[in-house]
Image 1: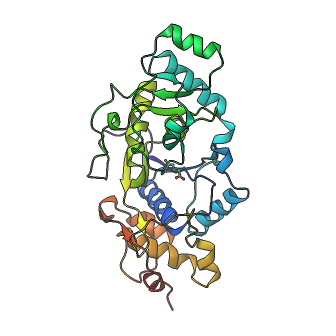
Image 2 (image 1 turned 90 degrees about the vertical axis):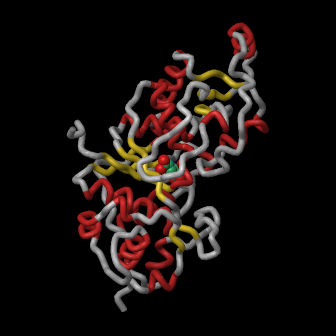
Image 3 (image 1 turned 120 degrees about the vertical axis):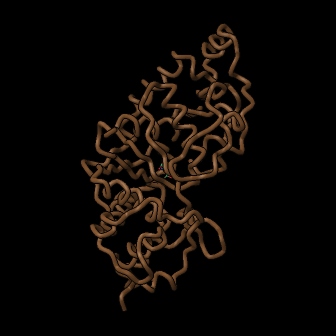
Length: 317
Ligand code: GLU
């Protein structure tokens, strides 16, 4: 059956630091996957976690994506302008009984609130506030008690089918009901990301497998809200040569450092495409060539290892 919409992919960076080569690799894969089938590609700036946003970062991220030949349809969507929409979907989740106020202290919940990649699944929330009786909830709310909002996962399916990752994430029940609005009033990544994907008509989310747990959460959240659920494809990340994660927080080299050192954008694009299994060593690809030959199945099942000598094979010198 032909899907009703063209495939629609997206890249959704948080402007909290320069994109490192691993981020750019994922962006390139998401872009080529959509474009290889004549699909649309959207860009969304996930600037909702305002304390972590860095001034000027968004501009640099867009510049780096464009330098690699990644283009997008329409204007980038900026989450910071969409809080009334997130409030509306939060209200719907509460009304449907899918979410509830949680009065547990910040200390109990801090792990679940931090960056999307930070230790997800390690902070099992015991469900303390899930079944508080309505009068008690009303009393606490009346007192103005600080609270977050959590989504119930007790009726969530035990399994999550990913379009790429073979290993299933742990069942949602293992980490417990998750936060959709933080106690400081900011909407959580899970809510903003899932709602935006659904409302923008995103049909496929291709991203790093550090977000596999989030895929299960977001799919469940969208089901609770009666919104369309995209297909998810979580691919292995790129690691440093010690097997550690590249991290913009740890200051891994960003694209501008390589460009300044004389490595051209085609070399970086082609090197990343090679690590994604899309071309041979030293083969230089234009963006159009990459998009026309892209095959999801060719992406290696194990993490890519960044080695600067491999990148040099693509400089054409
Ligand atoms: N904004 C998140 C990040 O930069 C990724 C969100 C996503 O792709 O779902 O890590």
